[in-house]
Image: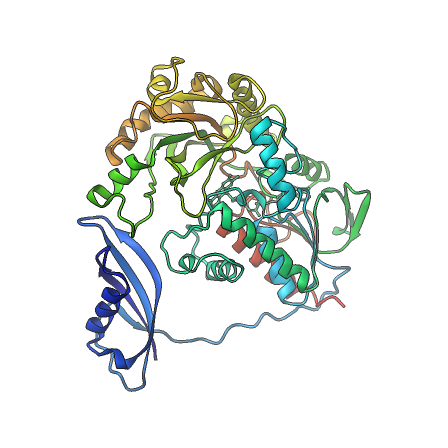
Length: 526
Ligand code: FAD
């Protein structure tokens, strides 16, 4: 018999032994009655003294009586639902555009079900990508096709690899178990806030791509979709920048939120786009020790707990200010994909052992702010602030930075105790000049509130780097009940760029959902 036990509490030093003791005590049995104990969730509880809280599954030998307890539940193993192929003939092989989490998982599930997808990706493979991103970070030479947004693994490859999501979908488990199967550490399967880190994620995405190829899929890098053709209201062909084309009647559009040229091409072709709210602001850096102390008190630095994270949120009348994509022990990364722009984001390695904690500090913006009813106006809005940041930052990939106190007082000063971790050049400047007033005003109003929630957040030397504009997609491509775009049969908008995800896991889940829909619709290609 298999059971789930929740709310098991141990000290930080207790380890496996204390947890096992808790399990046996709760079940009122001895260890001979237990076949195995597996941790399925570990979180920290900081309400009084910092402790671990666990959920575990255990298999018990036959005949053990389970005490009545709200924290104990017998697990019923349901047979897995089989995905049955549809009967619509597939004209060619399914084509997936983009190899970010959404495209990667879509292609993997298609390949696992015998659909041998073709995947095209505008950016380079991981090795080319590492080289080109390094060239941008060190020398300011941005490659507009292979960068932090574009290339093998998509936007999340140079990231913190946080695998948390607010969506509640059983497919999340598949995402974590596939990441684990291809090289992510065991702990992503049970930690409440799992993360991979860019160093591991880079290898995981390569292993996944190789699996797609092993199962008969084809992955083509440096291959961009530049045009589409349709026949009788159905997609029939995709043209690429390699002077070639691919004939197919099932195309997955997993292009991410930064493929502005592709959005424009699709819009010209009559695909419906609608404006979508997102958020803009800055990256804020603090010494990681300040965050650890604020969150963990005396337990800060204990080897059993990693560096602390935080999540802050503050609602005003019309706007919300919040922390986003927080990276403990990480660095701020130059993430532009267009020339003469500055875009910030955050990244960390598995160990999260750098000096600074960084997070986006952003404020919600929406269609009313974009200055036009045009469906793609949100892109132009992003571009405006990204260019201003570039001009304010001065040169090459120089980003504007400012101490928090100077930002609050609207003056240009120097650096304080927090040194910028930004992966390019920086220049002290007034960040008030590269964001709209309603954004900087909301940020300023939120600081003292956030400082009360997280002691030290408002420290004068905290460092801002601008600007953070790519928090989520500025557009949505509406889908019908078969998950196709409403204008063209067989074209499946997927993931973050199409407005159906926000983050690695939800993008991957949406990719899986699209793959399942394709399988249910089309018969397996010969
Ligand atoms: P993307 O990952 O953007 O992938 C789209 C792919 O499509 C790209 O590789 C692009 O090159 C390709 N493409 C675009 N146009 C074309 C075309 N015309 N032809 C061919 N290919 C094309 N999320 C988290 O959950 N946790 C984090 O810790 C985290 N950290 C991040 C750190 C950074 C630096 C960045 C930039 C993002 C981070 N994110 C994080 C967000 C996360 O990466 C995205 O939510 C996720 O990657 C979206 O997945 P996607 O597959 O929808 O799109």
